[in-house]
Length: 518
Image (spheres, rainbow, N blue to C red):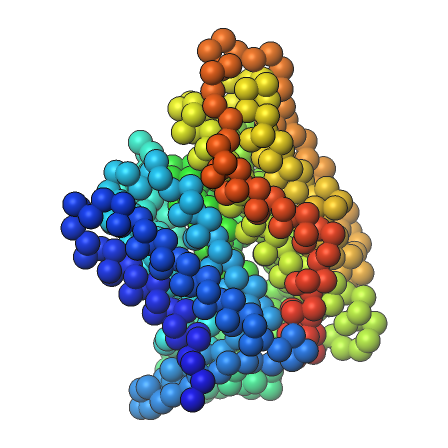
């Protein structure tokens, strides 16, 4: 019997989190060492998964399936394909990165902080590997609790209202998601994502909902009911991405959360929404998506363009980066929503679907890496200059911290999408697919590209260039440990920018299979 790697990916961080929480406060450095061992074990397991992954297969691999609650159609069902693999890689490495930047923040209540971070990692792993809604929803919700507590207990002066807003928004989305899947279970008799996708593809969903739900008569037709269920499921994912106008929780949460926690929120947790759209919403509701597609494309364009203008009004560096994160994830939802379910043929696959979907998943990985690195650099700056987040108060830091300036500058350029760095390839592929499907949408979205470059480079200029303010010359540059912490992800930005096929060959078979199922 082979080792159940996917189960271990979920259980190991939870087990280490419980062990960390049980240590006495007198344990001192032992708390951090045990937490590091937990993150390291997850990384080793993830490398084991990567080593066993067959890049030529587009189907599910390393499947673990056991009967759990047969009376409700609930199985313990885990599996991984190229889409899930990218998300698992982020869920393994970004929390490890966050751990490295957590010394200043964790000092308040070290055991609780590291335990919550490990619990959050376990919830993320379960979300990206579970394929039965009952099992998947448990981890979807379990990830919310430690994230809320990390923001609330370790955040800034306004962490209370920010964490409350975050919790309410995500809970509302979760409730509509749960109601939608209860309706799907009543219609299809299953919580299995694969079975429900086949059911939705067959075109029988609307009729089954009308026949099986006792309150279906409230709706004018079965089609209207099916669209309503789809919108409920969509809302759950739209809040997590977040899709405009459900994004208003994000700037406050990202700015008030400790920067290492923000690294995980933006680097991994935001990908739960994009993953849910690709894995769950689009395969199960192709007909309903077709009905709503025009409005969804407009919302995606709003998500790309409007946050870039909002970023100009910000004086807090973390809020600038938060709005940038919304903008970059907007490219992902645009690449998904622009595709027409039901379209077939080599021209559609190669001209629109292949580049758009590959670009979306590559953008998920690249954004996770780049945004986490930028927020990590913010944490290093905060540790040196308490109010450095207030743009315009400090300037000329390039003369005091040249190494940090250089590494953070590369991360800024990667976020802008400079060719040769990782951010360029994903955005290029998305725009190629969008242009092939709707040139007008690509033209509108290009406004976001231009404005993003302007506000990010403006923030960089205010922070690092100009005359050095009095008293800043004594600010220390990065030490050897910090250079490794920032330098390794920056090196990966070059690797993925120069050789994106390192990832594309892992995800393309899965995404072609997904596109073909439309």
